[in-house]
Image 1 (cartoon, one colour):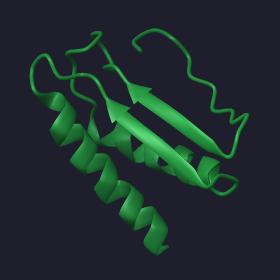
Image 2 (cartoon, rainbow, N blue to C red):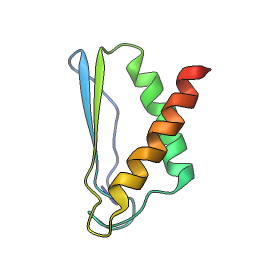
Image 3 (cartoon, rainbow, N blue to C red):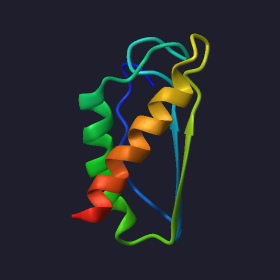
Image 4 (cartoon, one colour):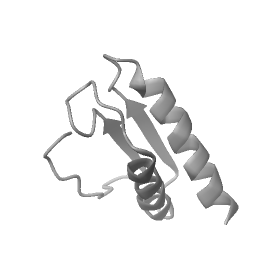
Length: 81
């Protein structure tokens, strides 16, 4: 959420990450740089987990699907490394 920190800590063998917007709650688009950084963070987190569920809820202006597809591309690149 905008203006809140998001420590990545898993207390189970899975994690749930919710994206609500980067600058405005529920309605802002994440930049490619932000999503690339998240892909790196999520890849590190995934090393000790079975599953990570990722949900985009920044859909008032239709950004959720585009941001989810972009993050998936970055995660696939991380996985290929």
